[in-house]
Image (cartoon, rainbow, N blue to C red; front, side, top):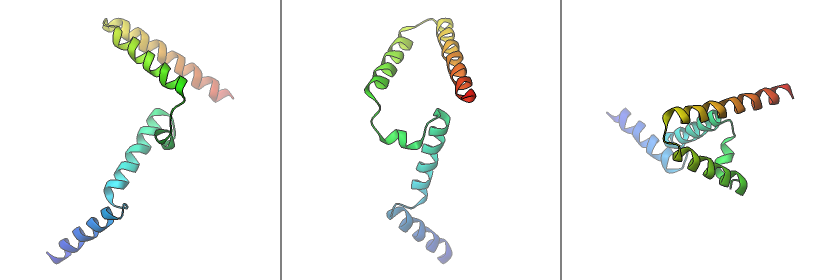
Length: 93
C-alpha cells in the first residue's frame, strides 16, 4: 500500500511541474497528428498565412455544399491525385 501511495504521489508531483504523463501524452498526440498531416508540431503554434486559411475555409465550404456522396468521392479522388503528383515531384527534387 505504501509503495502504491508513493508512486501516486510521484505522478501527482510530476504532473504539477508540467513533466507528467499527461504532458507526455499531449506531446505524443501532437507529434502523431503532425506526422499524419505531413507538418511539424510547431505548425500548430503559429499563425497560418492568411491565404492558406482563406483557401482552407473556401475548400471546406465547397465540400459541405456538395450533397451527393458520389460527387464528394470524385472531389476527394481528385485531391488525392493532386497530392500524389505533388509528392512525386518533391521526391524527384
